[in-house]
Length: 487
Image 1 (tube, rainbow, N blue to C red):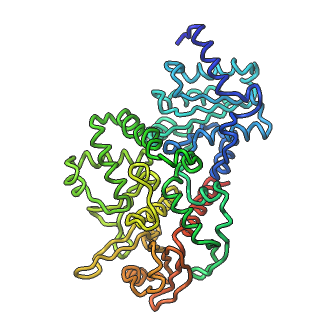
Image 2: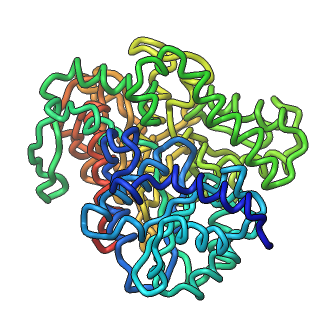
């Protein structure tokens, strides 16, 4: 495409606005004033590593901080000696770029930055919201093959399209990195209240394990409830004005754009009202057990269509389907029911209203918040156990970790928002049965505020406040990501 001189001039003007470091060496003050997410410590080394000729694809839900993390990465590159004129940021959503190829944008940007030697030096180019460019993966692959001296980074919110295209067209050329909603560990760090937790060691299953206990459980639980209501999205978590009406912000900028724009355009969905109604129902009942039969009966939507909708919502990082295992930790061959969790409990608050510690729905959202810490864990094989315990009783354990190699349970967690079972552990019949069947000597039970070890005839139960457990899982998930990335 041959660009009109006037259009090219306007593109250069826009690029100069979006790349202020070309003149002052600094990212915009709005982004510079934000505390970096902990995941930056993992993402930055991947971007900086230019030894392998691959593009880094940054994926994640809307509004979890992908653009902010790109800007923080750019500032860190500059602080570590990269010439600011060798760094380019391009937001594909910008209307003036419509119809302009990625290669043209890169060429124009390098001219606009007055970098005459850019072809002979190490450069970094960031494409934000790349999914809005048709066949982006083909264009990006071509750029990687053409410009060996440029490290390309692309971000996007439409996970399904990005990952599918990345796998099919970018084999050997793209590396994926998923940025989840804020974990409770990050939320505590960003709110600068880490003093509410104190590290200590326990002996767990014969091994010494690092844990955290609350220095003030009342304040920590208040912080945990704030996290459930607002904490998944950095902008809402630290903006009291948005917290006064989080629904308007999240519905418009996240839910509506995903449900009404992204998914329909990606998958050709004609009845967006059906999709919206399904998501609203799932959000209200996050953590409940579903079946396609019950969903079809309640919604009037055919089962095959429902299956597709659930897949789309999961691909958009809005929900996570958790599969069912029996009392021996074996998957059911025919899956009639499953649980669905919001990947971020704050979505429910946006659609309905904030919850308090005493609301009836709190138990489900505490469980949702804990699952939200597990969902981003690379390599995690978790399920919930559900089986017939007796003639009239159903046995269930909230979270079980399954050893993929052995096909057996390695651990079990029962999530409670109550201190009742700390005083009455013998009432945990389902957990007792599951431990005995799977020969588990230890299990964990969360509480509202009490902690301690209870030795029972069938095994040892470690009791821990739900907020402490969520913090530990979020922290370990971050560390696991770092280990898998080899950092």
